[in-house]
Amino acid sequence: MARQVHGGVRTAAAAAHLAPSRGKRRSLRQAARLDRTGFVGRLGTDKAVAVVVASIVLSASVVSVSAATPGGPTGGPDGDGVTPRVAIMDGGGLEGGDLVDGGDQVDIPGFAGVLTPIDLRGTPSGVDVAADIPVANTGVSGPFLDDGTLVKPVAVDTTVEDGSGMLKKYRVRGGDTLSGIANKFDISMMTLWWANHLSSKDELHLGQVLVIPPVSGLVVTVTPADTLDSLAARYGVSTSRILKTNQLTDPNLVVGQVLVVPGAQGKPIPTPKATKSPVVRHPPTGGGGGGGPSVRPPVHYGGGHFMWPVVGGGNYISQYYHYGHYAIDIAADYGSTVRAAGSGTVIYAGWKSNGGGYQVWIAHGSNLYTTYNHMSAVLVGRGQHVGRGQQVGRIGQSGNATGPHLHFEVWIGPVWSGGRRVNPLAYL
Image (cartoon, rainbow, N blue to C red; front, side):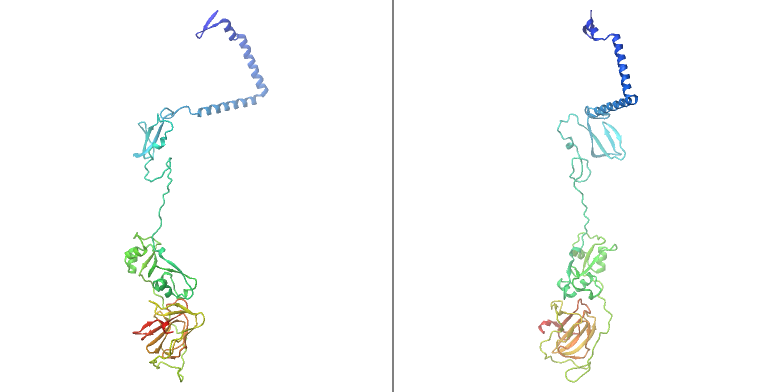
């Protein structure tokens, strides 16, 4: 007998073959129950539970990995969806920072800007969507990477214009004098004195490094109380001259800025306390020696060329006669003998505040005079007659002098009035 099943025809014999009898099903269930009982019996209850738990964990892991595999387009408001959207900032701003989401605005505290949804449906594969998205207007010039990273560092210029770059350095050599170094760089001797904060002429020594300003004046460091106008008023110099000398473009000064103030003057060289130099006075003796205050200078000079005024090996000319330095400087060891270049009468002997320190003036006749300056000792007295080559003092560095030397001058006409200095080398 045939019977229809799910739209098909199945014979009774086939149905009987496929469906087990009720008794047979009962036998199968009993066999399975006995098999499970045997399984638990063989493993024990604890081990069986452990096996079951491990099976559950393994099944959960498989399910988790399967769920993580993308199954379709994303971007919907509730997870997966069919409408991919990208929100970007267009540089504008909704007050309070609202998020635009398909017409709905969601407030985000602290955000100021407009987030515009872009519909990316239908975007062809291979198209760089990020390249077409406008970058937020941040006010900072690029270049930027694709992800918006600024790759160009912003450097801040912290340099300050000043006159320090105009200062030169000079290393003192043997025979150098402050006036000689100043003349070499065409500045005043006092400029060197002020720039190097000297307090004594004895400070100059071999190997010493001196600061050389570009022009005569002062080198100053700006303090919190200084302004360009106050410096100009203090030193009697125009502000424009200070700016030009230091090549400044900004008139606003900065604390610690170094400036050269052209033509400015500092404190004068302190005058040492006058002390009596050891003086040896020779009493009158007959013949050509001797002399005293009552002895009159000779009228005529007939002694020929003057002789070299310094005795001792190693002496040399450290500075020659030139404009601004109307003498020769003869460097020698401290205390070396200074002698009269020619016979004559001493018309001055002692300290004089004219920069020459301890000095001697000799009248030789025929309107010729010689002076011997910066000595450490004066060994003759005013009015004394001296012979050619007679010792009149010792080498020193008194007055405005650096390094022991003799500043030797030759005058035509009186030293004290109306005379003029000439090159001593023409008479030696």
